[in-house]
Structure formats: structure tokens, C-alpha cells
Image 1: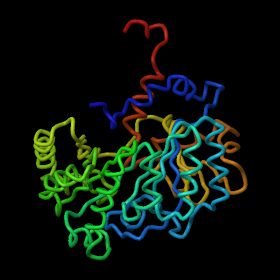
Image 2: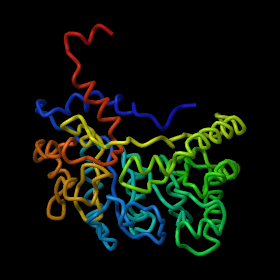
Image 3: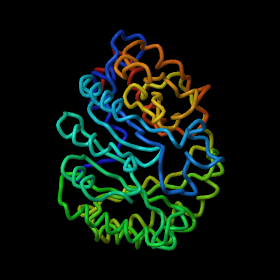
Image 4: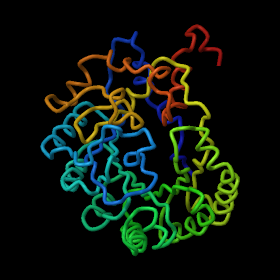
Length: 355
């Protein structure tokens, strides 16, 4: 089975990689852009980093923000013209609560941009579901509860929402389109004994891949590891058991339930990955990454009064303002990718032939 979750996708874009250093005069477009079209979401997950006070993400997020439809079409036109390869709708809020989304998908279906989305799945129905099934590359739905009562407790929604979600996923799978249906299974101490049954149920209704991830409960790596200490082996055993039982060719179960770095210190002084994947917020600011979205340190600039392509190409220097050793002493989703890139770009040219 081909791998969907791998650090090494970026090495397929060698021209882009070679353009990353400040010493290179070329500035190429990002390969992938994440857009947060709205900060609206009807769920209130207790661990949501954008909505709880003890986690550092989104310190300046306004839950009312959303990108005006006219501006969104302008952004999409820029991405297509620039040659951006992929677009993911994410949060902030839930992209499926963004009212112009259907019009955006119809536009994207006629472009060369591959598109995907993260969602809680509550609105995965009707024409939106049909458009994604026919034209999207992937959807990933976040899940934590294992029945109506637990799901309502996790997310602050009405009892019965879990059953409706399962029905939505099953109906989407029956559409039989090209879009890969995945689930992000968020694990904590409450649901760890239920993940096997939930994986089996998701497999039976047609989900194609499941990414198992730890619930983040603190900005501290040590505190996260202490919370999950008794769970790491349990999760690995259950993932292995379900992969064997269901067959690795019938569903991909990816175990991202790993120990956090005890320290978030960075040993490098620039972030190459922000030029590969960048983030546009619902506040019309462009950010270095999802970990720094809606923060001052992560802000590359505003596109409220200018086009995205103008901001992107106006100067390469803005991508070197963030100094990870100083500004990124927190969890970083791109840390391992940055380490690999810096090693790749720091290769001694005369010795690269001695493979």
C-alpha cells in the first residue's frame, strides 16, 4: 500500500528545495497552502488548541472572522496562476461552516489545484459531499467519542451527533468517488480502551485510513508525556492488532501517537518549510505555519489590501524573520521536516557524489 503519511513528500520538489536558502535569488511559490476560511465551529472540543486558554495556538484568533467570498476567489485565482499544487481547507473553525465553500469547490474543480479538507463531519452531506467525493483528493474527519453520549461529552454537542456522523461517513463512502476518506482519531485516557472497536466500525462503514494521534493537553512536552505515559504501549498494541485483524491492504492505520519532545528548543536559525507550506487565516493574514497562525510572531503580512501573490513575491527576507531558536520554543509540526531540509541543504557539494 502506498504511504500517505510520510516526511519525505517534499523531496519530490527538488527545484523548490534548492530555491529555499536566502543566498538563492529565486523565490518560487509554495507547493501547498492551508486556508482557514472561517473561524466558526459549532463544536467545543475540550482540547481544541484554538479555543482553550492553556494552549498557545491562536492567541489572537477572533471566532467571528471569515474570508469574504470575493477575496477568496481572488486568492484562488492567485494560487492557480502561481502554480500552487495543493490546497487544504482547515481551522480555526470548521471549513464546512463557511457558506461560500460550495462555490469555491466548483471553481477548484475546474482548476489544476488539488484540494482537501479537515472537518468534524457534521456538515458532510448533500452537494458539498458530492463535490468532494468527485473532485477532492482527501477528507479527514476528527473523532474522539465512541458513541452518542461520549461524543456529546467531548464536543459539547447534542446526544445523537455521533450517530449522524457515522451515517454521513457511510453515505460519503457509498458515493464511490475519487476522494480518499480518512479519520483523525484523537486519543486520551477516556477513550483509549475504545479505539479498537472504533477503528473496526470505521473500517466497516468505508473509511480508508485512520491517523491515531494523542490529545494535546499542555504546551509542555513533559506534561503531555506524563499524561500519556501509560497509553503509548496500549495504543501501539491496539493499532498493531487492528492492522493485522483488518488487513493492511483494506485500511491504513497510521500510528502518530508518539512521545512529545521533552524540550521544544530548536537548534536551527531559519525555517525552510514555511516556503513550502504556508497558511492563510480567516483574518486575511498570512502565517508561517499552523503552529503560529493567529500569533504576532507567525505573521508574514496582511492581504487585506493587497493580493496574495503580491505579498508572497514582494520580498524573500520575510521568510527569515522567524528565528526558530528564539521564537519557536513550542510544539512544531514541521520540526522533523526542517531538520531534514537543513541537512539536505547543508550538504557539501563536492562530496554529494559519494553516495
